[in-house]
Every structure is written in structure tokens, then in C-alpha cells.
Amino acid sequence: MTHWYNGNIVRIEDASPTTKRFWLEVEGTEHFDFKAGQFITMDLPIGERRNQRWRSYSIANAPDGSNVMELCIVHLDNGLASGYLFNEAKVGTTIKFKGPDGAFTLPDSLGNELVLVCTGTGVAPFRSMIWDVFHKKIPNRGIHLIFGTRTSDGILYQQEFEELAQKMRGFRYSVALSREESEAHHHGYVHDIYLKNYEEKGPDVTFYLCGWTKMVDEAVDNLIVKMGYGKERVKYELYG
Ligand SMILES: Cc1cc2nc3c(=O)[nH]c(=O)nc-3n(C[C@H](O)[C@H](O)[C@H](O)COP(=O)(O)OP(=O)(O)OC[C@H]3O[C@@H](n4cnc5c(N)ncnc54)[C@H](O)[C@@H]3O)c2cc1C
Image (cartoon, rainbow, N blue to C red; front, top):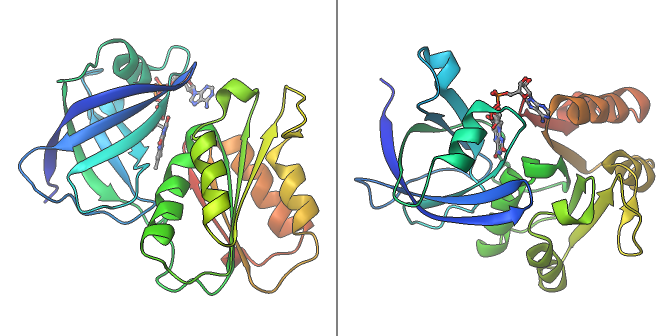
């Protein structure tokens, strides 16, 4: 039977003009266990029927043995759930949720180089995975995070990833801005970056894609149809 938890919002911070970080403390458990990359599903007071009320959100922090998790959520125009979370939920608000769920996780042993491609809040499960690998010192063949957004004010966790790239061996961080030219970042889409860097098909690369349908569909098409990677090398999580 599904177990529902209550989580209390203990902190909220702006991450960009349209995105906030929410910290949820789980009631009644000392240790909320999840695997890096998994998500929870909230039952929010935004509709009568459950399919109107349920929304899933990736856990953005690495499992750290605590009962506090971080979520990174974008406010969509006319979005019911994100509208509720941005305009009505506050520190102290209790959220009903179930989970963790999802198989968008890393294998126990990282034999391949990982290329993690995302746009916007699609970075959330990757942040969890990358910090998990870092904290647990999991042997790996390199991790390349490719993050895309429109303009530089939409870059999420930028400073954190830039600092991590200095201290985590084999971790690379690339940013693509589709609507802003800057010296520091690629001007264009995330697709340009992996198309250029992984065109010469290495035998040991696995791609993980996360975000909204348009970006993920285009990346799947590029990697499998155009570049010839096997389906087993391309994993993805769709946000909608
Ligand atoms: C496994 C999983 C994990 C997820 N993790 C996250 C996460 O970590 N962070 C996060 O922010 N979201 C995440 N989502 C998406 C989230 O569940 C909601 O779909 C999202 O918050 C929108 O809900 P809403 O009620 O605000 O919008 P709705 O009221 O459901 O939709 C409002 C309108 O916006 C349209 N719309 C939907 N997406 C977009 C878009 N990207 N751009 C423009 N229009 C759009 C819809 O078609 C609809 O017309 C995840 C989804 C899944 C399935």
C-alpha cells in the first residue's frame, strides 16, 4: 500500500527569477531514504481529482542520511502546482507526498563516462547524482554536465558546479544559453555541445537526459538516430 508522508517546508530560496529551491523536512522519520535521481509525488490542494492534484518533483540533493530534501521548482505561466508552491506555500506549510520513486538512477558501478544533459530544473536529479558520486567517492570515468537555459539569469547552481569542477577530478561543466551571447558560455542549445564533443562515438559513454519533452525528444533523436548510439546508452526522465 502506498505510504504517504507529511513534509514541512523549512526553507525557500530564489534560484533564478522563475525558479525556487524548497527544502522539505519529512515528519515522523529520522532518515528519509532515496537513491540519487529519484523523485517524490506531491498531493497538492489544487483540484478535486487526484490526477489534477498530483505532481512529481525530482530530489535535488544527494542522499545524506537526513530527513530533509531539496527540490528545485520552476514557476510555469498558469501552472496550478507551481503557482500554489510559489504563491501560497510558505515556510511552515505541510505538503503531503509519496515516494521516493523512479528508476532514473546511476548503476552501482560507473564503468562508462557519463554525459548528463538537461535544461532548467532538469538539473535537479543530476545535482543529486553528481554530489552522491563526489561524497561517496564512487570510482568513475568522468562526468560531463551540460546545462541549458535561455539567459544567464536562468543558470541554476552555477557557482556550485563551477567550484566542483575545480575540485572533482573528471567533472566537466558546460552551459548553453540559447538567447544570450556571453564569452563564458556557449551561445546556442545543449544539443550543439554533445553533438560536437561526442560525435566520435566512444564505446564507453552513457547519456542521461532530463527535462521537458521537446529537448529530450530532440536529444534522443540526435544520439540514437543521427549519431548511432545504442538505445541502452541513452536514459531519460521526462518532466512533461
Ligand atoms: C518524474 C518527474 C519529475 C519532475 N521534476 C520536476 C522538478 O524537479 N522541477 C520542476 O520544476 N518540475 C518537475 N516536474 C514537472 C512537474 O511535475 C509539473 O509538471 C510542473 O511543476 C508543472 O505543473 P503545474 O501544475 O505548475 O502546471 P500545469 O497546471 O500542470 O500546467 C500548466 C500549463 O503549462 C504547460 N506546460 C507544462 N510544462 C511546460 C513547460 N515546460 N513550458 C511551458 N508550458 C508548459 C502545460 O501543458 C499546461 O498547459 C517533474 C515531472 C516528472 C514527471
